[in-house]
Image (cartoon, rainbow, N blue to C red; front, side, top):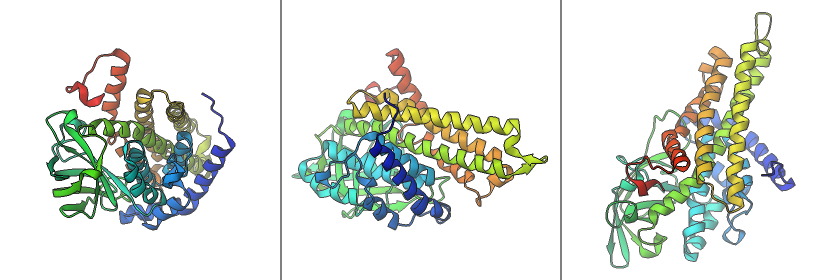
Length: 389
C-alpha cells in the first residue's frame, strides 16, 4: 500500500479541513446544546460535493475513490461527529447501497437528490428488540398485488426525522436472513410515523428517531434488490459503513489531540506549562500513537476496496480499534484539561460523549471481535451462523 496521497487527494483533504473549520466547528457546541444541527449544513455539504463522493457523475455524484471519502469523513469528524454521521448515513449507507443494488430507475430517482443534499436518507434496520442479531428482525412485508404492505417498528434510526427516503429492511418470508427484503420507502408515505429521540448521551445534534410503519404501501418497483436478498444488502452496507465510522473516529481522536496539546502549552502549573511534565507528555503521546494507528487501519480498508480486494475483516479491525481509540483519546484529553475538561465551554467532554456511541452502532466492539475471531480461526461463535457472514 502506497501511503502517499495523490495531489488530488491532498487538495480534497485541505478543502475538507477548510470547510470543517469554517462551516462546522464554530457551531458544533451550539448544535449539541440545541440537539439539532442547522439544516442548512446539508445543502452546503451537497454543494461542495461531499455527499456525492464515490458516486458516478451521471447520477449526480462527484466520483473519487474511497480513500478520498475517508479523508473527508476524518475532517468532518474532527469538527463535529454529528455532521460526519449525516454524511455516513445518507451517502455511505443509503446512496452507495442504491448505487450498488438499485435499478436504473431507483438510481435516477434518488441519487441526484441525495448527492446534492436536497434529500437525505436513513438506514432502517435496527428494531426495539433487535440490534446485533439483525437476522431476527420482525418488521413484516406482505405482498398485495403489485405492492407490499410494511408493518413494524424501527429504533435508533440516524437521520430518521429528516430523511426523505428510508431504506427499510423487512421480513417478506420465513425466519432467518433469507426471509428479509430491502425497500426504498418515501418518508411521506401514508402509515409511516416518526418520533425523534431526545436526551441522547452524544451525537445530540444528529436526528435519531423511532419509525412506526402501519401498513405502509410501497410498490414492488421500490423493492431494492431481489426478494430475500435484503440481509446480504444490509451486511454489505454495514461492512463498508464500519470504515466510515472508523474514519470519523480518527478525526475525533485528532480533535482530542489538538485540543490537549494546545491546552498543555498554555496551562501553567508548578511554574511551567504542563506540557513540560512527563506524565502529561505520556498522555499526549498515547493519543498521538493511537490516532495514527487508527488512521492507517482505515486507509488500509479504503485501499483494499479501491483495489477490489476483500476487506471485511480489515474493516472490523479498523472499526474496533478506531472507536475504542477515540474513547480513550477523549478520556485522556479530559485528564490533560483537568477541571476544564469537565465543562462544556471546552469541547473534550462532547468528544467523549460523541465517541462512546461509536463502540455500539454498526456492530458493537464485541461483534467486531467475534468477526475477527471467526476470520482467524474459522470457527463461528455466533448463535445464528448465517446471520453474520
